[in-house]
Each structure stands twice: as C-alpha cells, then as structure tokens.
Image (cartoon, rainbow, N blue to C red; front, side, top):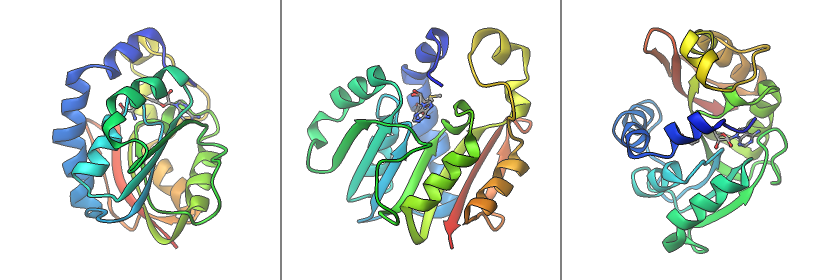
Length: 200
Ligand SMILES: C[S@@+](CC[C@H](N)C(=O)[O-])C[C@H]1O[C@@H](n2cnc3c(N)ncnc32)[C@H](O)[C@@H]1O
C-alpha cells in the first residue's frame, strides 16, 4: 500500500533521513554488523536514503532497490544518480513478488515498509527466498501498537487487518526460514522493532 500525502511528506524530509542515518543504521549495525563487498537488496527504498546508507555505512558492493510507488523510485533515481548503473539498480517492484532468482542476495534491508503490506507473511517468505543460506535480513518495522494510536489512524494510511506485534513479526520471520535468535529489540514503548535474522 502506497503512502498518503502526509506520510509522503514525513518520509521525504531531512529529519527522516537524519533518524535513519544516526539512529536506525547504527542500531542495525550493532545487531548484524556491516555488509562489506556484499550484494544487497533494499525493499521499499523510498527516496533512496537507505540505499546510500547501505553503500556508504554498511559497505555493500552493490544494492538492488525497488519500491511499489514509481514516484518514489523517480526520487531515488535522482538521489542515487552518481551510483547508477555501477553500484545500484533501481526499479518499481512489489515485496510480495520479488522479480529475482532464489538465493541471489547476501543481505536484505527493510527500513519500515512491511507494515504497509497487507500480506506481510508473503513478503517475509519472498525475502527468505531471495537470500542465500547464511544471508541476513535487517529490519526496522512499525508494530500494531503504533498503528493503533490515534495519530497513526487519523493522519496516515496503513492496512488495518492482521497487523503484527514485535513478537509476531519475529515469529513470522522464523516461519519464513529467517532466524532472529534474540537479535531484535523493541523501541519507543513497543511501537518499533529492529532486528537482524539469518536465513537458514
Ligand atoms: C514508510 S515508507 C519508507 C520508505 C523508506 N524505506 C524510508 O525508510 O524512508 C514505506 C515505503 O514502502 C513502499 N511500499 C509499500 N508497499 C510496498 C510493497 N508491497 N512493495 C514495495 N514497496 C512498498 C511505499 O511506497 C513507501 O515508499
């Protein structure tokens, strides 16, 4: 599900980028380490800040990134033009049907998109499918606890049926073949879960 106008404005601004760079990325790095020289996929790349972080902070050799919303991919294309086509491949795509062969990537990053996906378990299955055995899934997700808040319900647009708690998201990873093994943390009163899961 695409973002509404309010969330689009919240995502496409320097405050969001600063949170991603200075809070989320260091936390994910502590949980899962860097990805030097690796082939990485970013699902739901938005305007491409996450892809920059994966290249510059995590040290990936190459990032394939997609988003459901063509307008966001266009923004990412402008932001990442100096890396195209050598280190980045961008496209419109859907995380519930990833257009890639099995076991293609060393790591997958999800900066806050799966809570937008009605069939989130299928998304996790697809992420597991495209990871090689031993590959890592880095995630930052918004839980049901946050989505039930008045502010989220009033101003933002998300699927309402079958949302997940942090615990349920980690359990969904396990079912998909992604072992969290205690490498997840809930933050901000349980509104967010951050973690890293390994493909077995
Ligand atoms: C909250 S934004 C996060 C964007 C970016 N990852 C960030 O952290 O700034 C959620 C993004 O997920 C995208 N999205 C929603 N459903 C998707 C799907 N099924 N497949 C791929 N991207 C999706 C939206 O278009 C939007 O860009």
